[in-house]
Image 1 (cartoon, rainbow, N blue to C red):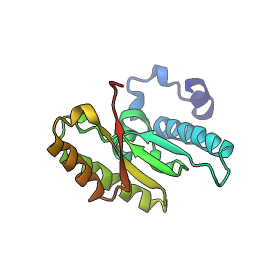
Image 2 (cartoon, one colour):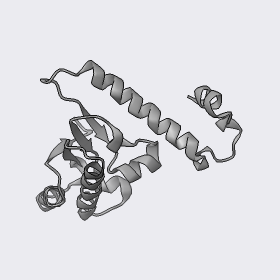
Image 3 (cartoon, rainbow, N blue to C red):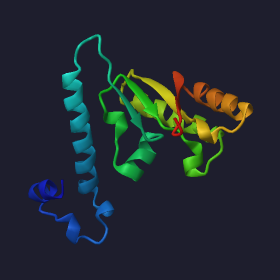
Length: 151
């Protein structure tokens, strides 16, 4: 990745104090991930096969945390991991993350489904579980998916 970027741009990111400040490096990495998704898409191009991705909570945060521009992915279903406790946020944040994801997909003209990923160990009561589902659905999510690291 570093070598390919240097060949393309002439910049060795290992010699830069803060590689994350180089926009071309960020865009290069975004494009590489999109390219991988596109290759997988080409392998699953049958009309009866769907492609899905478990992604970081919303595109803006995903770009910042892991250089993942998931609103550019050509998939049928997105499962943003809206694990509010990982970001020290309240359950209401799940709705905010869903709204940002849905908006980003609409801006790109995507008609893919978005299912909010809920992290079960962080939802410690029935009331929290209900609020998490309501937050997701009332902010545009097509449904929810449940994640549990314990099992």
